[in-house]
Length: 328
Figure 1 (tube, rainbow, N blue to C red):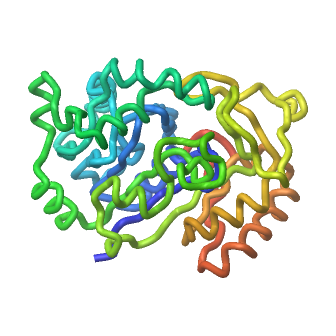
Figure 2: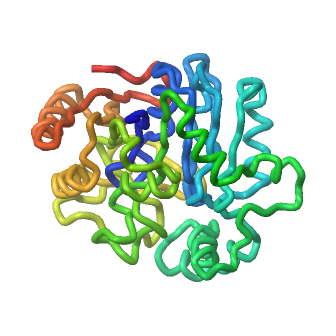
């Protein structure tokens, strides 16, 4: 019954979850992909042929050649229009694939976006409506499983169908969003996202029983980033850098297009996330940002922390595409 592999970010987000999820999907034989995204996160995947997907709703793992099901979990908040656009962009690879929306997922509304603006201004959030939508769900005022379009309602499944789909799946790739250090229960509150970014929370937000979890793939950057603006402090053993210092063009956020803040790696952050996530495998991305000797030294350090939890670095990333990933 252990058939779910879960991708979880170990820093502040934007570590390349979409990239490793796409890579795993293309190489791992998954017949089901599932997530519980909110509109404050976007994931990018570029395959070996250069085809690019930028998803805010669909999992990056839709590229699996074995795909039978795409499942959008009950913890999801999303724009139906955005979902339709992503389906249309990928209709050639979604032929014969069942897309399932959990009946407790929340369609995003203009009111959610408007209600989120004050919080976004105060903590440097994306202002996409995620927190307001979750608040409406908790208040029992969100219109779950509802939209006016027939195509949407045809994708909403029942609780029983969701459960059966998980049971019928042979191998499931589950994709988390954002990063462990942005968890609402972690040390950077209130400069955080609207939920925890942990394996337990993601499994719950995807209505996946914990006993189905096979392994956790943790994702890290050599140089972590935070969203731009007044998005809060960093760990006291890391330093905020400048893009000029790195002699690089600034990275821009997938959702807001703001210039990202970049930092040196924090050992405290690494050790906090290693305990909170306990990954079996680790994807260390943006190795092209540091020297080969620094990569070797960093992998040795990460492995020294991960080994007590049974994990190790299994993949290195040197760019934005499938072909830039090196399996160790």
